[in-house]
Image (cartoon, rainbow, N blue to C red; front, side):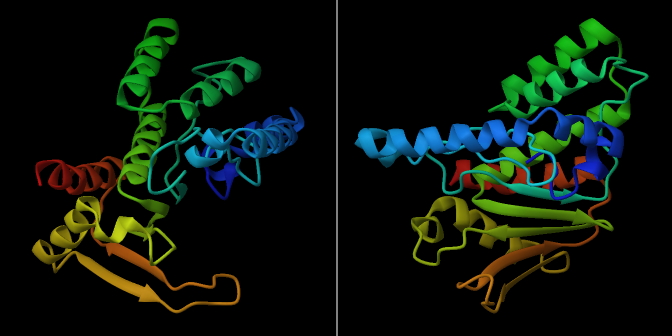
Length: 231
């Protein structure tokens, strides 16, 4: 999710309200219901486990995921990242750009988005660059089997696949996470939180301290992912 729990924090309160007025959340709810009906009629769709999720607060669409250990990654951050109205003046156009960026399924799509933004609106401001890096962070997190990320106060917390019997925990991807923790004991701490009434299973999380900004968080996850591809 591009929020991420507080669309007002990421998009700005005014833009968040504008998105809500568009009725996007209801649209994606109906779309998900249609996908569920198709799953019943077509086994191949059921097997692929397609879904579309939306942020609860703003209804910003999230990437359709397929063939991953997790479908999406929720991201919470205190970093200010948005498309300011002095860079793109039209509120409707900003909404379209947010949707386009959130639809980005890989690094190539994000690079294309940045190229088009620069071509149309001029040099990309740091606050917009931070937004595209947040999307990169979410995409890499999905590849790493991370269901949720919290990046606040220079601390990165990653919550992994909920189901303990998931094949994720015997995969090279998770092995690379464990190896990274072992080689960075002063910065990393992995722990399992007890199950709660809201969550039947205990949650495994990784906390990385001293992460100075979004770019640093992104590079941290890239280093972990690179370990899994080299294994």
